[in-house]
Image (cartoon, rainbow, N blue to C red):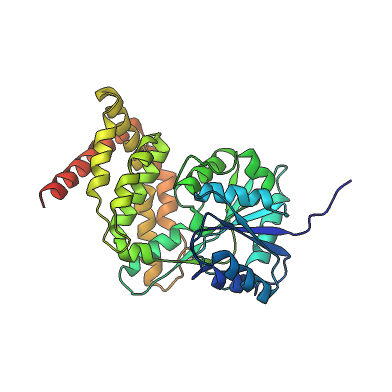
Length: 357
């Protein structure tokens, strides 16, 4: 006997001390139309009134609400939330997400259903394009590029800020979020989906704060993000544990200091010998070569921005040409060797500059 779930969607939000931001998100979710959903706040040990304020906000806008206590750690919190979900469909959001469009969730549900109707399995996941909420207009072209990237379904273009929508069954098949990670759990799950299923871009947009980029420095943070994605891809997972101390030393409002991370990378690269270290650099070269498409996409973004086109909506002529004609050359073995060498020169050159500045 088939039992219809009580809700169409469970929105799961991990939180620690988010009393300032989360009630605002819940109030915004209360304006959603055309879909029956619940909100689950997975609290990892808040010392403020996060759950109480969220419960009050949910009651005010008449949203079914669950507040659960979980061990700290975003992966653990999201996994715990999924176990409490009363819907077959899950949407994971961050606490600082902003939702403005009243039909966002209903339209996303319809998009997921339409794609699933064309395939025989359930291995589909969706993400929203992203808009950054900023306090200034510095680096406009860079933010345009990063927002446009979030409309794509390519590796390392999808992260938890955009929201992950997938079925509970598929999440279980993927092994849920990796609880051994304190961060990058979203990237690891995204890559599992690339390996086993299919990503789609959902209609509409969600927004997130650019405060980390603005306080730490956009270039510094994006450089570190690229390094993290690289080490996740090439399997240098020891970096994530080693980098915890560097993160702890980083003040919340200070410009991000990349030198401690570069020192850790150098040390770890050759801990297993020169041969293994060279292999890591070769793998890094392959990763950089695979991402050379971003140079072509930057050209598209520059042209589309000049014509007033919204991020992600312009025609990617340069990217299409790159994929068809240039990518096979860039990802060839000789090109990957050259790229590995150039990347190593960039890395150690920058490390020397940071050491002696």
